[in-house]
Image 1 (cartoon, rainbow, N blue to C red):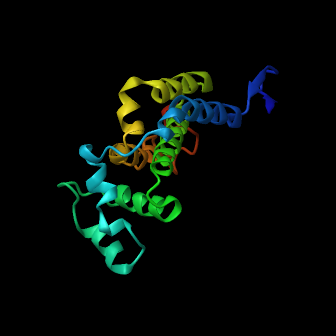
Image 2 (image 1 turned 90 degrees about the vertical axis):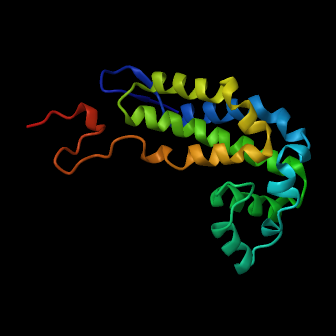
Length: 179
């Protein structure tokens, strides 16, 4: 898993960083997979009583992409509940596990974005770990109905770093020397 950088020193493979970030985030929030739904805190409206997630039909998919739930338009978030319902039925452990996995993937995306912005891997690793363990994310991960925050964060992250330009194909753009 170790390679060598151009100066002859050892450098860790990005896979090691991604694996460490993912495993840490999963371990940190694993306990939440044993939690129940919070019926009085929106889980009933988003999951337990949401007829649009009960089956993958054309009319349900249309409703997911055209209707709001509790005044929120969040089709990716509702669609993810449909997938959970298909996989787990109404077992809350599966819904919580999905939140944990999505959060761990978001932490890995933080690492990727920070590296792409030009930081060293250890800086990106620290940023990703801070994101993974920050108490601000507890509610988002441990409460099924707050998946909307996790999926909303996941959507733009891959595009957060500047794109390489055709005129200066070096990566990342911030290191380009303009001619």
